[in-house]
Image (cartoon, rainbow over all chains, first blue to last red; front, side, top):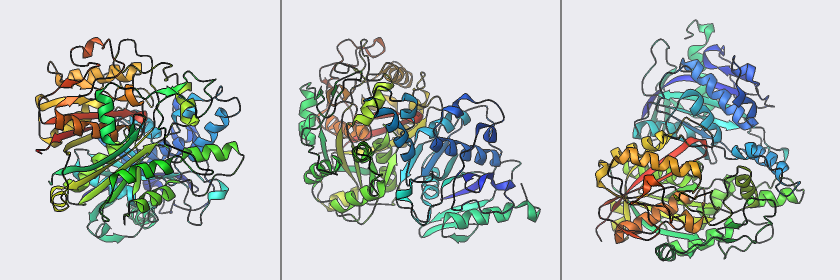
Length: 243
Length: 376
């Protein structure tokens, strides 16, 4: 099972960014996440963005930057690209926000807009409709210390279906203080895995799912941080190799 | 590619406990939708839902706990090496709601990781599993993934376990979205006015042929094909042209290597909302052209059970293929014109080896399974 990594984008405590403009700096760090504004993500007015919960905003922004990084943001016809992301907390903060609208008056003021985003996969629909992505979409909850689950699932999806690509990544807001663990990496980061490289945009390299783990350009991958670092090193403008 | 068998099933719904009870209730046209006692519905569009009577709530616990026991007791032994795929949209949401009402902090063990560990332990599995969230198509997507794992030689057994509850949280949300009907739902009926919520647990053990035969299981059916696609249209409303559902069905048909004429029946999502049912009929009529097979939905009997919906419908599909009969669509007395002659409130005989089962949901999700009859 193989795929090309054609784009990387993120929203993390390091800020908004994408691989080809990262100067090699690791975006997966601990800290407080800043929720991006519409202007930071889209140049044009976007009414939908303002209605999104924070969880969906970081997911949509990271996916947007990933597709932009790959040169795949613009489209004419819908594309068979799927979306898979792992999340520990899911849309817990949205759940709590919704409860605040529901409880005070026994449901009279329950927010339909918030409720629509109390499923963690809802924002996948926002990504899909904005960028015309018709592939499979799911959010996966599991213990995932390496943060590689979505990439493995994405590679399997590509191998076992007619999809041409998968946006695979991670997404979590800063959790409530009582749930914080030492290894939190809040934010969202997506990689665009595709069966083919893109014309006019050099790939980061090839990702391969072997029986005993992931390899990137032939090297074993232990976790997502290592993989992202390796990708950014290859395409850092400092090396004069930026795509 | 290896064949994928559904070798064991278990369920609990508003019609009672066990697959046989569900099947008999559906054939008899029973409706498990009742007046809700669990919370006050004074401010909501409806006062009814399909609840499981046996779910007692212990202090600080979740109703998912007794539901798990009901399912595990039915299912019996599961191979220790089975992979675990859970499909729950909201997990132990009732505990979060209780804690929040009491002014407590978020319970530390509320996340999916402890829930997965609990389920894995109860079935005696080595795999800690993963929860798949694809809205109302969650268990269908989980079944598709489980089937793909076995078909591609990545697993010999996969346990798909799905469960969701009727909670005030979810009920108020669907009420706020104006999606609830205040009377028993009427899927595919011209007078449908919305859905009834339900709750359920369902487990399906998928196995390779070799493993099923070695363990002397009598398979109920095969999963011959699967597909999933996004509408890329709207977050809560389906694409009216059914384009996403058509893509998902086409992928499933292709995977199964069959033509539409070979599909003997359809188990549709059939929520009884205006737009969902219209979208489905549009999609199926486009997909099957002039040969739409008999079609039914079960949500008029048990309500819309969210995450487990597709798993329950696959289970019912197994029975339908084995008995060459689909249950009536409870509540549908005046079918939409696009479904006339193919949808009935009475059971319909079918003839064939394959059944299409589909689900759609928030986020533009669509998923489809092709079930294949096995020779008994």
